[in-house]
Structures are given as C-alpha cells and as structure tokens.
Image (cartoon, rainbow, N blue to C red; front, side):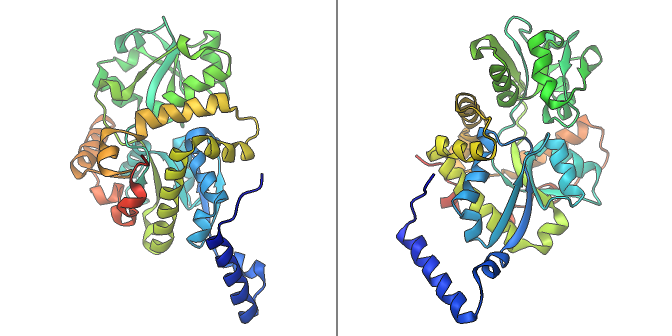
Length: 347
C-alpha cells in the first residue's frame, strides 16, 4: 500500500539527506543512530493494541529518535515479567497485574508511566443462559490462563462481588484453548479482558448476541486499565526515551481513534489472519468501555487521579495480603506524561 508523503516529511527527508552528505554519513548510519527500544504487548496484534503498529508505520516513534521493536505477548503477567527480567525495555498490559508485581517485588519495581486505558477490561465471559449474576459463578469451572490479567485479578473481583473463591474452579489452560473450552461446554466461562474473550468466541463461531459477560467494573472495581510500564531503574536512566515513547504513543492513540480501520490494517500487516469483522468490534468495545470514560473525556488519555491511585494500591495490597503498601511513586510516575493537546480525545 502506497502512503502519501507530506511536503513537510519530504522536506525533512531532503534536509536529512543533505546533512548526511555534509557529514559524510550513509543512510544506514542515520538509521542506526535511533535508540533501539524493545517493546512487548500483552497479547497478539489485535485491534485495540494496533495503535502501536500504526505509530511505527507512520513514523511517530522514528520522529522521536526511536527504533521500536513491537512483539506480541501471552498475557499481562508475561509482559510484566519480560520487562522485570530486562528482556524488554517497555511493556503494555494490565495496571493491576503490574502494580501487584511491584508491591510484592519492591526491590525490582516495574512502574507505570502512561495509562492508556482508563478502566480495567477484566470480566467473566460465558454463553448467555449459563450465568446470570456474580453469585452464579460459584460451582462453575472457568478457563483461566495463569498469566491472564482476569485470572490475576479474580481474587479482587471475588471479594468485591461476594463470591466464595473456594467454590470456583479456575482451570489453567493455554491461551489458544481458553475460548474453545467455553464453546465446547467444558468450562462455563472464562476469565480475561471482555473484548478478548468475547470476540475470540465470535471468531470461533458464536454470535455476539449469544455471549454474555460480567465485567469487574460492574461490581464497583475502578482499577486503572492497561498501561505502559518499564523498570524504574530504566526510567531513571532513559528519561528522554520514555518521554519520546509516550509522546509518539499519544499520537498513535489519536490516529487510531480517528481512523480505527487504518490502525487495524497496520496490525493485519503483521498478523494477516486477523479479521476486520472481529478486530473492529474488539477495538470498539475497548474504546467504549475503557478508553472513552468520563474521566478521559474530561481530562484526556492518561489522567491519573492521586486519590484513585492510592485507593487502587491499598485495595490490591489488602486483597493479596501484601503487608507493606508501596509508595505511590513506585507504582506510577507521571513525569513522562505527554502534553494535554496530545492526550485529548479527538472529537
């Protein structure tokens, strides 16, 4: 697909070539001058995460002097571990899973620095008629991959919803088989992002109007959703890289919201098996439930209220029996937040 080049971009290219000639540098040397960033997603190249690939294609990260390698993942738990172990520099995934990791590993903290999805996407997804309310989950078997954010945060959901977790069987299963178990009736539901599980069931042949879910947010949980994070030490050593990555990501988010189809096509070029009929509704579900919240509409993408942050941390520590509540700045660092104009939701 041919992409139109603006006059400004053309001018910059000519100027860059001229500078390279004057300095005696070849084009490859200029490319190598960009800072390499290893970046891991929480899942595959799906619609809601397609903004990162769109940002790479449109040169937003390159404009910040970054050469970003985007890799798919297998759950937020894996993404956090990859970053904590320095396999990747930056990750994207569930805020609660990341915060829980840092609270239990304060000597190797992973810190959020740009919250893209204001409200958590977690839920229990099932065929309609199987579960009517949270208490109905007792006595059921749920397909629940261990690294999945919904599985990780299930104890919090159970406590707030008044569910006895000892009466629920969480069956560990690999991600590719999670929805299959529900479709076959071998599990009565599945933990996960509502958009992930529901649209994967659609891809498996179940009409969306036959799928139900109970979101964790529906019982009053207001955890932040998915966020960009990095090791605290890396952020301290690479502040310009972190700020540039955040700015480029904010631009990619705006472009995805303006034209989600174009964004999803960028993901389809990395994963040709993706179906627009699945990925567009998946994106729309995340946008409506987790991105375009009243908070974001009023304050822009990435707004973090200090009182809410403190409440989130205390709630997680209480549920997971973490005695030492970490300082808020260990969990979240707002120093790299892009300007308000870049974070404003497009009209």
